[in-house]
Amino acid sequence: MMEQPITAVIGGLGVRGYEVYASYARRNPDKIRIVAVADPDPAKRTAAREAFGLAEESCYESMEALLEAPRLGDVAVIATQDRQHVRHAVPAMEKGYHLLLEKPVSPDLQECLSLRGAAHRYQRIVAVAHVLRYTQIFSTVKQLLDANAIGRLIHMDLIENVAYWHFAHSYVRGNWRRAGEASPMILAKSCHDLDLLRWLAGDTCISLSSVGGLSVFFAQNAPKGAARRCTECRVRGDCPYNAVQIYMDNEKTGILHGNTEWPCSVLDVYPTPENVRRALEQGPYGRCVYACDNDVADHQCVSMAFANGVCATFTVTAFTADCCRSLRAMGSLGELEIDMLQNCIFLRPFGRPVQTIRLDPVRDKFAGHGGGDDRLMDAFVEMLRTEGAEPLTSIDVSIDSHIMALAAEASRLHGGKNIVLSEFAAQV
Image 1: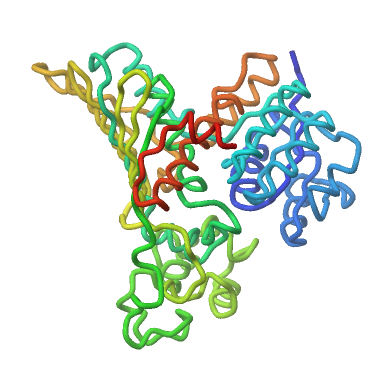
Image 2: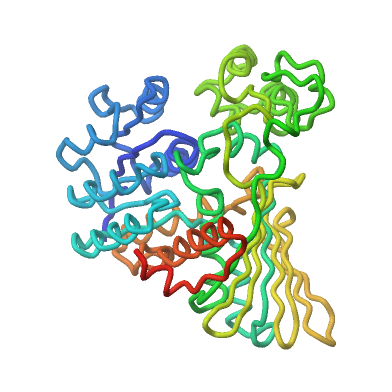
């Protein structure tokens, strides 16, 4: 058993790498210590160096450069861009690191399978950051389903409410706006939702179909008189996607209300009203949502059949006010429903009074991950320190969700064609 904190290197100092994993290390120095970082942005490297007291030579310009050094820690956190994950993960395992791997593993199924093979070959622990399994609310739902609280599970309805401003930030203006440069939206945003459904169902998905597309965020839908940049737009006052409102004025997300974390921290490592305004005037996050180069779907629905007879539907949509998830599970003897904003579960056994299960308050400001980030890190660190069992979201179990997501995108692109997943995976 490790008595000292585990040591970790981080590749990629974006929102996940720095504001989630590095933040956890800052708050839990007795559990995990950051010993080296890698990122091409010098401002991000400087911030990490100061936060963790790192030497200049421990802050690398790229993950490739970090991996050329001797093994520096117990774990490599891979939080680089989607299409870099496998390129960084396999050499890290070869070097001797266990991995905490940001989702998705890769938009290429062959790469996913090759990474799984490397994990077995090098006998490394690989935990994929499917954080929803670790949330208190979904962990409780799983316990209730396994205890037959609603009888035999028949059907599930899961909705990912992305929130209009979050979708504009990440999938219209941001890094995940183009499938060819990042991943299809159903994979980048929702592979852990599909992982959640597969976990709750308790069996593999055997077939699915999917529909959806890009319906709003393109040039033909721009309001009359709209400018290409929000800071120059005369009609921005009537537009909910107005970047000035989102990043400057909004009570929850705006810098003028003291929000120096995500999403403002994406515009500048040390956001201030002055540099956020400058970023909106010059950078990608100030662009009109109808004048960007995005091509990923802004809404998508998936219908799934599982091997044990459970059916499920999943919807991911940009067009919601709140950022959270909604779930209804229907069984032979009752149903349950969750409220992530209140972190509670409504259990409705047929013919009996409704039970309300109130859980701990969620620290996640937007409730999208329901507190799962810290619980993932707690579980991962404890597993390594005690040399415990495989992670709940090991690379082996996480492959299923990637097959599901990539098959769903293939179905969507072929008009909602039904896809048998065993046949789809066999084509790789």
